[in-house]
Image 1: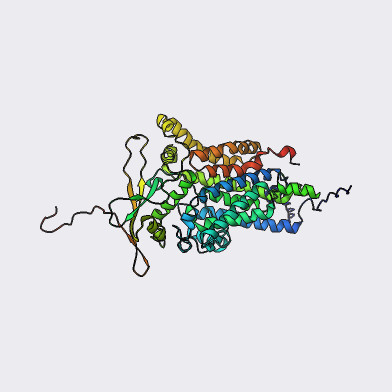
Image 2 (image 1 turned 45 degrees about the horizontal axis):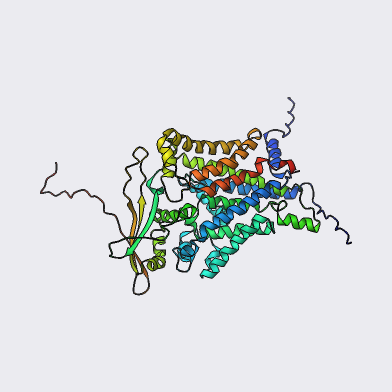
Amino acid sequence: MPAEPAAVTKSEPAGWGDLPRAVATVLLAVYLVGLGLTVAGNSGSGASLLVSVIKGRLFSPWLVPAWLDLGFDHPVTYGQQADADHRLEVRPHGEPVWQAGPGGNTSGPRAARWQRLLRAVVSSEQEPGREGLLPAGFGTAVFAACGSEDIDLRIMIQPRPERQLPLAVPDPVVAYAARLRRLSGGELQLIKTEARREVAPVASPGRGTP
Amino acid sequence: MSQTPTPVAPDGAASSLVRTWEAFWFTPAASQPLAAVRFATGIIGLLACATYAADLTDWFGPDGLLPAETVAAWRSPLAFSLFDACASVSSLGTAFVLLAVLFGLLTIGLLTPVVTLLAAIGWSALLHRGPMLAGPADDCLAVLLWCLVPGTAGEHSSCDAWLHGRLGWNVARPRIRTRLTIGLLQIHAAVIAAAAALAQLKGDAWWNGTALWWVTTREAGRLVDLTGPLLASEYLCNLLSQGIVAWELFFAVAIWFAPTQRFVARAAVVVWPVIGVLVAEPLWGLTLACFTLPLASWFSATAE
């Protein structure tokens, strides 16, 4: 009968020495400062220049790749149109009927990811450098869905009913609309459709003004 | 000439702070609680992967909605993703399956130290491939994985523990590394709860108690339809909405005090998932519950 292997116990000191503790203390202190700055610097309310510069130069280079440059700024909802349900609709350019775009028949956490994508498209129109970036990227996928290389796409928002008037479900509104087509050279062209706005009547001398 | 007063020994606030810091970070801790965290993290990771699986090609495939160059222009220039290199459907699928396998290995606790690190890297890479798809649960899962990296989550209830037993190694013992992980989990749990409460208090909907109405009338992503009960009782709507904020604030504070810590941590294991379901972020709720598992002291009877 073979002998039972002797229990091997790796020798480990009860605690760390001064040097490992000092190193760990420094690392922890640096990380905790970085954590505080990422929370302060990733707020939806914006960040001060001081916080942005310190975080951006000292902490972001190693926190961003690890997906740790986070603000945890998660309000769930503010009850505003921006966090209502979004849906993507597409059609070959000029055709009257809109069809549901990708992600239309999803539910649960999967649907939540599609919602984030569509919200990002809408919100990025207000972010310099990101305008039109995502819809232009949709190109190949949406062309295939429509069977055309000249399409219209729009993102509709379904406003939610007020609790006091739950039966009055508001009509959906267009949050973003654009025409997307592939030019003869293979380049994609995105033409954003601006919503019509009411304008003040032009005052002319003949009509007189009070 | 008056006599110079003797300098007071530094036994005041500074020394108390040092003692508290030492006790918090450098008291060896048993690793049984981390086994539960490891198991729950692996399961949550698999669930999170499942929310990507069906649409992976639609988003990240060669003809997907989010081409790598578009995402590279969108995200921070400091970010990069290993998934950017997956130019074909097969390579994308392989990389994704590997990530899911890592979460599977984490769940069963095989090669835990390496697997935890690789899962953290892989999950961060997936999030960077489509940052506009990431939600609060994804953020918290990334933090959870990185917090587990220095710890010893595979010493109990794991394949590693079984293998160690077969080899006759007795490696499980209270360690400072375990304490570091538990401390990081505690700090992040409090920060996440406080940040969520502060974010909510910037909006009228949370002050006037209608926030949950706005959440539940959002059909996409919701798990339960509460419009009926919330319509029937405004008090219920107010109670649930403001109860969520109150819980977050209470949790962020009470988790730090010995008399309340165990109670709050145990309650959190139930309350966070319930909140997650109410606000249509179930994985977020589960992940936050996971942060508090080591503080619930369910495992302390066998810990030492």
